[in-house]
Image (cartoon, rainbow, N blue to C red; front, top):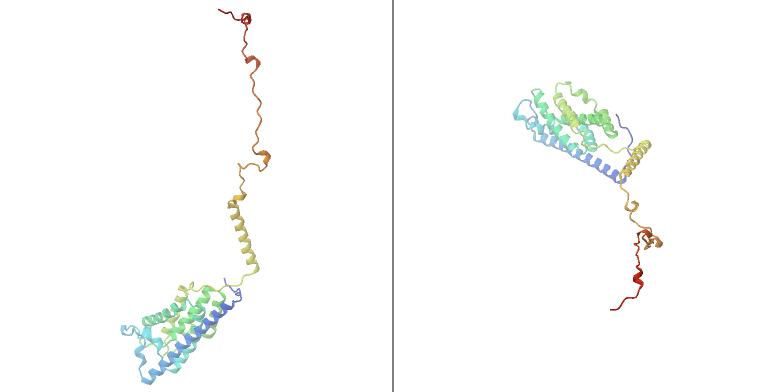
Length: 281
């Protein structure tokens, strides 16, 4: 499912952060490409054979070329052909995938060389074309996998400028290392799959019905929680609390006097002799 919902307008702080990231991406890539041109000039002035820095498939002595091969080129035309791709694809990678780029670029650099060492023809392979092909396939496949708005835009830009790399991974010319191109492309695809969740998708603008649905869900959750909540102390009735009226406090209840029934009183017989005065002796 494609997510083409337009993002919300960035805040002032977010806009400054995005601009700062873009400027840093351009600076880093420009410095790297400038160093490649400086290295080409220095090696040409010293008449150094650059093949010793390349990758020769199957030779253990050329393992150093896994690191140095992308740094050397056969001439101005060779480096000029790679410079444009490195600039555009490098900026797209660093700007759109700032967390994946520090991992993806070294992996593409090394894996493209390893693949060339394994499947390459018996010749010296040099140049940054393996790196540029890896970055193109990384950006393009990441857009297909992530399917968010900015990733798709980056993938479309990479394909618009460098879609011809899909053909250059196959044998085309005698002096062109399609093995380096193919190995870089496979490394880019691998990095896109492995790092697909490392950079979070940018925030997108929500539609009105989505906001209403989230609000209704929150109200339902609050209603369910309120049924389980205990009442507050002032809401609990106290059964032993007396009324607050003064007339009901300290009142004694009258109890009727209990008298025995007449039948229960014993009868006393009076002897007539008892009425006589006592005799004196």
